[in-house]
Length: 361
Image 1: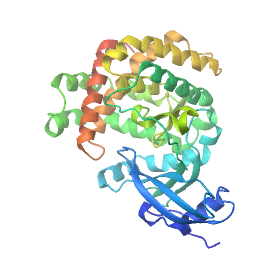
Image 2: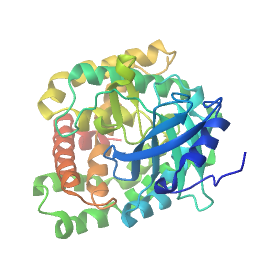
Image 3: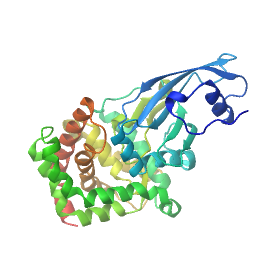
Image 4: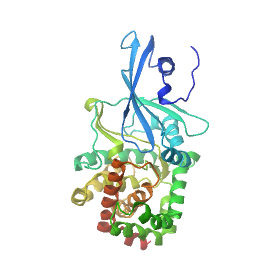
């Protein structure tokens, strides 16, 4: 079998390339791919995703569909994916970590990264039929409880693992957030001119409180405790995947790092529930996460500590909303998402007195 190029563009994938990839993966045991069709899928801001529909000779020799991720064609998103290391991170995650985790994660079929650490190909199982929840609408509390169980599994599997704390590429996102934090005063100062029409002044003023505590915040982000997904929200989760076989699957591992991963709890609840739903259910949901964490063997983290961290780390989704708006390509849906995101996050930090807690540290 001829060797094909390991990393190619989505529009260059043809039957010969797919035949070799699936054969080497042990998925195509005989025959060949005879046709490849693709269509856009997902709503990612940093990468481009496509569903590939395949035909075979003999028929049905392999999976009918696969999902592939690729570096964005948009120059702003592409630059951020490169500079932050997030394209590299997702490929490395699937190559070296995903197989050892008990959290529900898509099965990798092929993962390759170019030398420029920008261009990549990531082929995964197609989880359809599955149900997505529009982040703008928000999840139900029962859906969030399912996600909390998977986040707890991710954190427990990696809790205080010195070997993971020492992995060089797992530190890149943590370092990126140090830089974002160091520059946050400039970010909020420039925000009104660029995006001031999107959010009320009161929400920007809430985020600006962080600028008085940047060193403390950096020390909080620096703790190496467990894997941190770094973008755990409704748009990166599928429910009832594979026709209900998997109740929930966690997607999009570009930002994965090793730090204070419990941020994932505040981030998901804050961005993926409406404010009224969050207020009604957050205590129970944080308790549910903690119980799941304990069930996986984590013992030195009390429920009271978990609740205080939830309050404190609610600052991160607000920081992300203010920073993220200018870091990726803009779109009508993107603007709506960021407006909604910042509104929910600012309400959350007010409700929980997050900045008062930060100031007390």
